Amino acid sequence: MAAEIIDGKAIAARLRARIGEETAAFVRETGITPHLAAVLVGDDPASAVYVRNKQRACEQAGLKSTLHRLDATTSQSELLSLVDRLNADPDVHGILVQLPLPEHIDETTVLDAVTPLKDVDCFHPENVGLLSQGRPRFQPCTPAGCQYLLAETGVQTEGSHVVVLGRSEIVGKPMALLMVQKGKAANATVTICHSRTRNLQAITRQADILIAALGRPEFVTGEMVKEGVVVIDVGINRTEEGKLVGDVEFTSVAAKASAITPVPGGVGPMTIAMLLQNTLAAARLQTSAQ
Ligand code: GUN
Image 1 (spheres, rainbow, N blue to C red):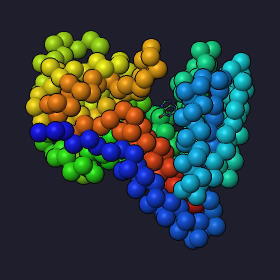
Image 2: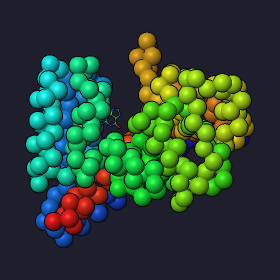
Image 3: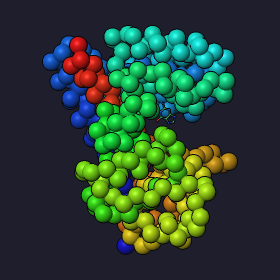
Image 4: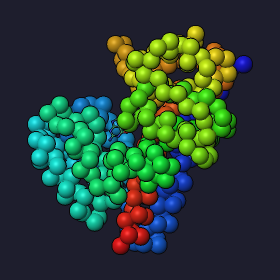
């Protein structure tokens, strides 16, 4: 049986339309327009494209977005001053510091400086702590996007074995937290694998749902999965020929999977939709706290 291709682009478009309606209602009720401030340091071309896409999505859904572009030579203290200004600005509801930052800047110091109520990436330790206790303030964007795709596809997660490849703070770890918690599209048995995992294939072959987020092009091959697996590919890698590929070798894995996300057009669009949702949530939180 051919695998179902999970159309992240279409699912994200529907979610963004709904967020647009909710945003319009919020603006009508409060007179406040949710506002995302994006900070881009340096001139990494991929980051510039991501930030532009995030801004465009904000505008389409009726949210305000502003971009703070800083030179690659910006010092850490200059960046921290900007973050402080945005933290204190009542017109700004969400702050996104695009990663990676230049090497001379300590990412953890900068991300920790974002006030938790405006941390729409859900990177701050307070928000990660709330998430780990099953009472999230914000949803981690990429993992929540993956979970949303599973829910929309009608995949049975309860009691299923979810194998997460990768233990990053942005995807792997929060992904595992979301899937193991009680609730809709969750209640799974979760294994996290990483570069030091022994006998990886023996574990990935047990996966009912495999979430690949290790950042290695086409790492997961057909022989690493079982028949009927559902595969979520978080990877975005550019080959030497300039082609975009995921962390999953699509053809051999799709031949065995019951459902699979494509790259591009799978997880990527969902991350942006979740960011919009968090920015609206941040505006709600800050408005009700006044
Ligand atoms: N760089 C790659 N992914 C992300 C993300 O989700 N958030 C931010 N801030 N930077 C990123």
